[in-house]
Every structure is written in C-alpha cells, then in structure tokens.
Image (cartoon, rainbow, N blue to C red):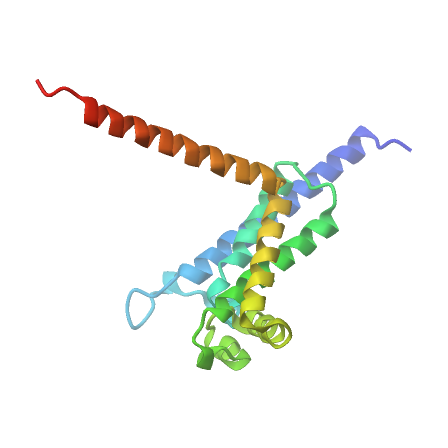
Length: 200
C-alpha cells in the first residue's frame, strides 16, 4: 500500500529530528572534549556539568586518543540523515563504521611504546586507543603478531573508507597517478624554462 503524503511528511520530519539530535550530540561532545578551564578554578560558564564530566571520562577510557572519532561519526551520520541522503544498506554501513573506528583505535594503541600497550593503561589513563583499542590490538597481536596486526588493521581501515566514500581503489590509484604525472610534467617544464631562458 502506497504511503500517503501525510505519512511521508511524518517520516521526513522524524528523520530530520534524528539528524538534528545526532548533530547536537556531536557538537556537545566536541565541546566536552575541547573545553578546558582557564585557571585552577573553572568559571561557572566553563563547567562541563556532571554529565559532561562523565561523558568525557567514558570517551577517554573507551577510545583514548581517538575520542574525537565518536563525535565525528555522529556528525557524519546526522548530516547524512538531515540532508536526506541515506545509505542503501544502513546496518552494513554502521558495521563498516564500527570496523573503521576499532581499526583506528587499535592502530593508535599499537603506536604506543611496548610497555604502555596494556588494556589497563588504555582504560585508566586514556592512552593510545583506550580500552577498545587495547582489547583489539591485544587480540590481533596474539593472533597475527605486530606486523601482521598493522597489515590487517590498515587494510580494514582503507577498505572501510573506500566503502563509506563509495570510491573504488582503482579510481583512487588512477587519480593519484594522474596527479603525480601532472606534477612531474610541470616540474620538467619549469626546469626547461629555467635552463633555456635567455638572460638579457
């Protein structure tokens, strides 16, 4: 049964509200992450409140140095929904975003010095990729080793970016190659002009 105009309008309004809420949450999380007191005693307008402090600790403990990825993904999804450009397969898209997030967090954790690559350091001090990055990097290093973990995580990261951006790897390589050729042609022309310029 075809949807009526009123039903379609309700769905559009619902999607717009969801998009606005996601963007608002993303902006709030950005503020929570970047907000720092100007002195030893924060002013009333600088206070994050109990909710802001709680969310900051959760973000720092779970994602460590990758805490900005959470509001970025919320902003991305909110903007997509708000401007009515939904993905054809939302569950798969959300799964790919989770893979993208975990691969970045794991790489951040692997970049720590070996003695700091513990799940406890990630959770307690927000180092590397936090608790999530610590868990995934620990698992991958046990199964694939350090080098193998980097290969796996970078591959997952690149694949998820290509899937989310809807750009094929072949197109990316061809565009990069075209830019490299253009650069060297321009460089060759400048060198030739410099060498053969007649000094008057």
